[in-house]
Length: 112
Image (tube, rainbow, N blue to C red; front, side, top):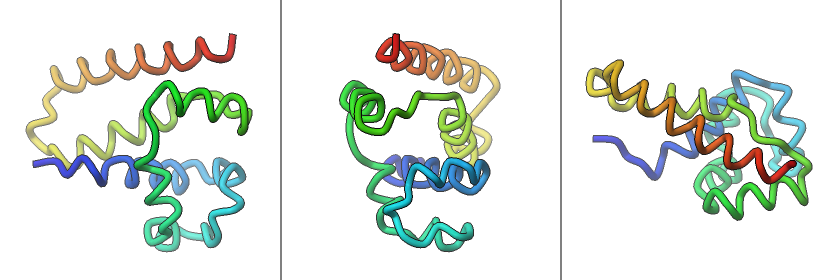
């Protein structure tokens, strides 16, 4: 069973590790120097569980000047696939990718 409360934290942490340049947006989060520090960072954990899509999009576009990308979606997919294991079938992944495409498209409308 997937512990959904941890998925946001793990996805954000993975994004910060795999795409280290994204750390520049989290300067106030303290130690983000390596994967262990990122995974143990309480601010990363908290940030990975906040907001709904609309308010998250508005906040990131107005205050952070940060446009949504597929990077976090890809990391989210990896975390979910790891947690679901064999239950994350190719059909489920295809449906999930379509869903994420719609979400990213909706978030991008905030910037046009």
